[in-house]
Image (tube, rainbow, N blue to C red; front, side):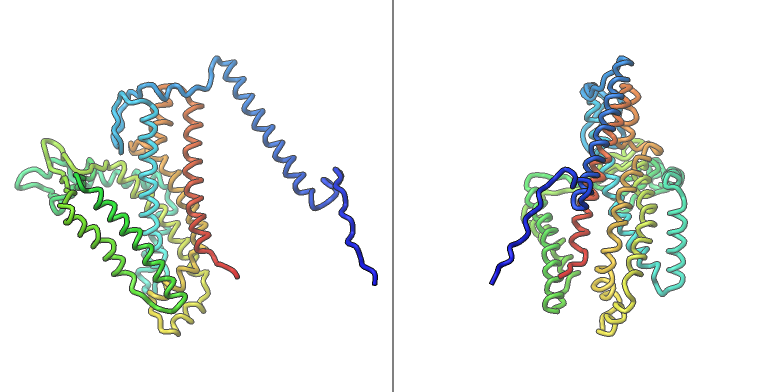
Length: 404
C-alpha cells in the first residue's frame, strides 16, 4: 500500500502580486494607499510653501489670548476676558446640547408620526402625511427663522406679567414663556444631595436591567412580566424615598419678575428653543418616513400570525413589528442624527452661539486665523459624527438578526 504525499507548497514570487488573484487585490490597494498618501503630502507641502511665501505660519497660540466678546447662552462660566479656547469650549457645549436634545425630541416625534402614518383612521393618517410633506420639503433654515419670529412676536414680554391686571401669567407659578426666552425652575443641590442623585442613576440602570430580564423571560420561557408600572416605580420611588431620608437636600429656585426681567431659575433664550424645536420637527419628518418604511418592510404575515395568537395590536407592534423593523430603521436613522448635528451650525442665523458662531465666527474674524479655525471646526464635526456613528452601530449590532 502506497501513501500519497501532499503536494509541495509553491514558493512565493513577486510575479504573483500581479498574476495571482489571491494577491492582486492587495497589490492594487497598496498602490492606491501610496498614491493617496503622496497626494496628501503634496497638498500639505504646497499649503506650507504658500503660507511661507505669504509670511504666515500655522499657529494655535491665539487660543490662549483673551476673547474680548460675550456669549449670551452658556453652560459654564465665561466672560469677555476668558480665552478663545474657553469660548470655543462654550460653543462646543452649546452645539452638543442642541444636538443631544434635538436627537431625542426628533426620535420621539418621528416614531409617533411614523406609526400614525399607518393608522386606520383616515384623518390622522392624512394629517401626519401633510406634516411630513410640509416639513421635509422646506429648508430647515426657513423653519428656524419662522419659529424664531413666531416666538418673538406671539409670546408676551416680561412687562406683561407685572401687576394684578397682568396680561400674562406664569404657568403653575414656576414657568414663564416670554418673547425674550423661557424660564424654568432650577434645582439647588445642597449637602447630602449626592446620595439622592446616585440613587436616581441607580434606578435608571435598574430599569434597563429589569426590562432586559423581562424580555429574556418572554423569549425563553414565554412568561409575560409587567414592564410599564415597575419601570415607573423604579424611576420615582427609590429617589423620592432617599430624598426624604436625606432630609430634602434638593430644593428648587423659581424664576420671579424683578425689575424689567425675570431673575432666578434656568433661562433658555428664544434662539436656543427655536433652533432646538426647528431641528427636531424637521428631522422628525425624515425619521417618520424611515419608521414607516421599516414597519412596511415587515411581512404582513407576521402581524396576522401574532393576531391569531390573541395578541393585542399594541403588543403586536412592540413585540413583533418594531423589533424586526429596527434592523431597517437604524441605518438611515444614523444619517438623520448626523444631519441634525451638522445642521445645528445654522444657529448663527438666530444668534445662538454654537461652535460655528464662536470659533468659526467671531474668533476667526478677530484673529484672522482662518486655516486654524476651519481645521478645528472640521476636526470637531468629524469627531462628533464618528462618535455618533460608533454608538449607533453598536446598538445596530445588538438588534440585528442573529443567525445560527
